[in-house]
Length: 262
Image (cartoon, rainbow, N blue to C red; front, side, top):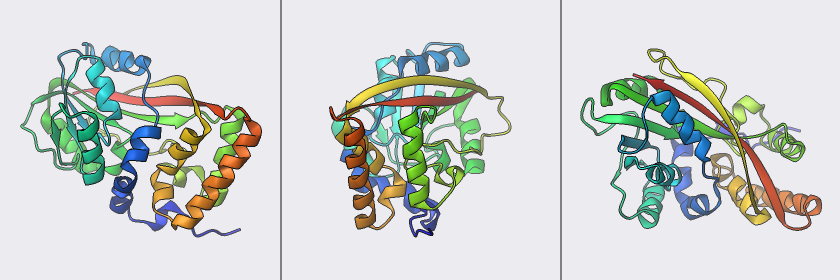
């Protein structure tokens, strides 16, 4: 059956800023990142995060920013969306926050030891953002991009992915940035840099309501008709409650990391 819910119907810039209307939901429901991810970033960078001058670009509500701070990085958060930036400022009031995006970084040449994009590189103009990375990173600095991707080897998550694909009327590649956190097949990595790729599996146990809110905080849902999104998410909640009657689910992820030293 043909649907009208394709995320491709909404231009990329509008989708990128759609999170502003759900910033509090995003902050409360989205998954964080495991320690092993930051161990991998340090391994590829060849230095500890502690003391690293770090730009967390597309910082959103500060989920990755907080984890970088936990590791001792000196972080400046960079976020274009007013709603997301306001939520970050509420949650992390002491963190320097700059309104901007990766296509035009408002920082001096060779001023950063580390530039990170957590769930956000795909929203950039890759050519422009790549040039800005090369300008702002110091020689020997590191670019680290990562995505939480739902682990579709887990049966209930695989079944959910198929329901999402049918609902949005697209294949997994087109859903890429959308409701299930599926990885983009072509991430537009800067060709001038030599990337190392790591996969970091992890899980979290959350109330079913948090899982459904996590789904609903993705741009694929935020940019379709509100009633259609609400109906799908209500049906999904009922379906999962029948499968997990204690009202708790274990979300399984693989963090896909791509990092390169300049």
